[in-house]
Image (tube, rainbow over all chains, first blue to last red):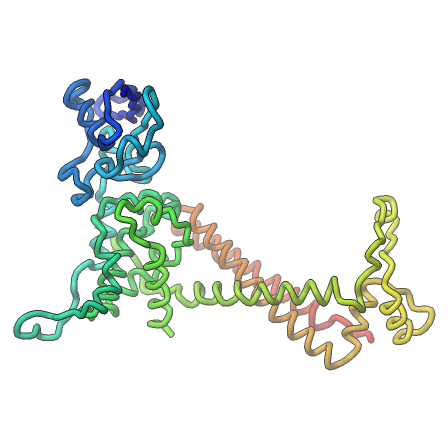
Length: 236
Length: 161
C-alpha cells in the first residue's frame, strides 16, 4: 500500500520555522514505522534527520511523536497506525525539549535529570568475596523498573514536565525508584531528598500519560507512588 | 549543569493532601445530610419557589416537625427560617460542641486541601522562582484570613441564645 507520511521538518540553519512535509511512501502492514522514515531518508530526501540505532526496541534512540502519541518508531507496526491504502501517518519530535533538527531533540536536560537522581548502586559496605546477592523475591520488586531503556517517551508525554522544565520527570524518578528499592542499595538518605523536593515527586499528579507512552509497558505511576510513600515514611 | 532538588521536603503537605481528601468525602456527606436532608430540618419536598418569590425573600416551608420544634424552643410566635433551624441545633450545648468541632475540622481540612491544590497549579503556571514565592505567600495568607473568618463564624454562631 501507499501511505502519506507527514514529517515535522525543521532546519535551524535555514532560518525558517518548522513545517510539515508530506511524502508518499510504499509500505507493508508488518513494516515498522521506522522503516517509513528510513525509506524517506534512503530514497526520497537524504536531508531528513532522526535518531535510530538498534531498531529493535532496546537502545531507546527513536522515541518520537507518531500520530500524536509518544512511541518508539521501531516498535510500532504500520498496521497498528493506519487502516489502509492512502492513509496518513504523522511523525513529530518529542514535545517538551528544544528541537535540534527535524525529529532530533536536545536531550541535555533529560540526561542532567537522570544523573541528578544518582542512578547507580550506593553501598559503602565492603563487597563480599564474590558478589552482592539478590534473591528472586527482592528482584521482583524492581524488575519492572529495570526494563527502562531511557528513550524519554514518558518524560516528554508528561504535562508536569511541559509546565515545569525543572521537574525531574517520570524517567529520572523511575530510576530513583529502581535504585532506592534495590535490596543491595544503601543510598536512600542521599537519593530521597532529591526526589522529595519541589522539583520531584510532588509534581506527579498521577496523570498516567507516562504509563500510556512507555514502549516497555512499565507501570511508572505505580512505582512513583511507591516512591512517594517511601519519601513520606522516611520523613515521619 | 544545574542542580535539581532542594533540602526542603514537601512530603508532609502531600501526605496531608491525601488524608484531608479522604476525610473530606465523609465530612461533605455528613454536612449535606445534617444541614440539608435531616428529617427535622428538611423543607417540604414538593415545594418549589418561583423566581418572583425568591426575589421577594419568601423562604421555603419547613416540615411540621421542624416548625413544632422551633416554636417549642423559641415560643409560639417564632418565625421558622433556616437560621432558626440551625440555632435550634446549636441551642443544645452537647450538639453545639459536636457540630462546632465538626465544622472547625471541616474548615481546616477544606482550606488545606484546596490551597495545597491551588499552590500546585500556581507553581505549574508561574515559571520564575520569585513569582512562585509571591504567589505562595499571597495564597497561604488568603487561606489564613479565611481560616480566621471561618473560625470566628463557627465559634460565635448561636451565642445570642
